[in-house]
Image (tube, rainbow, N blue to C red; front, side, top):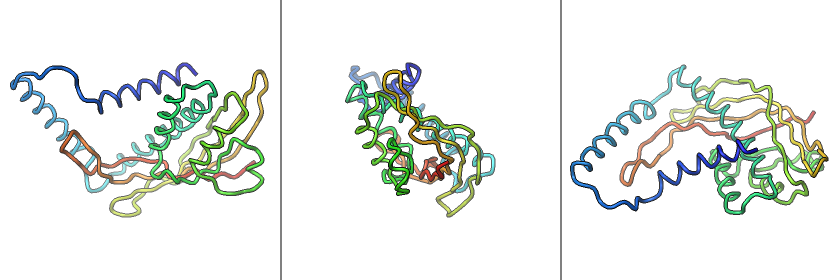
Length: 222
């Protein structure tokens, strides 16, 4: 759990550095010119790597691997979010990071912190899953994916969207003291997408770049 917290803190620290305004005094014009040239070089690199009109096979494979990593990030962030002793502000930041993994905040996710929900066979959403975690009686909840495979490789759906599917098993356990309760064990199909979106770089530059997202998680209960 310490490693998970450090991982989240590292990401949040990077986010703060990128988005916060500098408190340092103004530097000379020579430094400004050098910084501007460096930013131009960075933008050129971004354009060449991420702003292509279509994606090649090796690029799609790379984005597929990034999608798998996002699924592991999803499970780690959920487990961290489910810690009852988590600082409230930090928990809100983790919640926002969970939303950013998905293309939509209304993503359909059939995972639950309550065994009774499984019998109803109803669709759930990411917000409902997080609210269920908030209302749970457990001190912590572990979300563990395994046997991750590619069911359907990323392929073009439209000129601005590539889609695919991953397969994995999901095991969810609730922990209170020395007691561990199995809440859900399911085989899953995870919908993924690479979508061309507008992304802000600096104060004045907006580029269309390819980004990979989790789209939804459907499960078949075992």
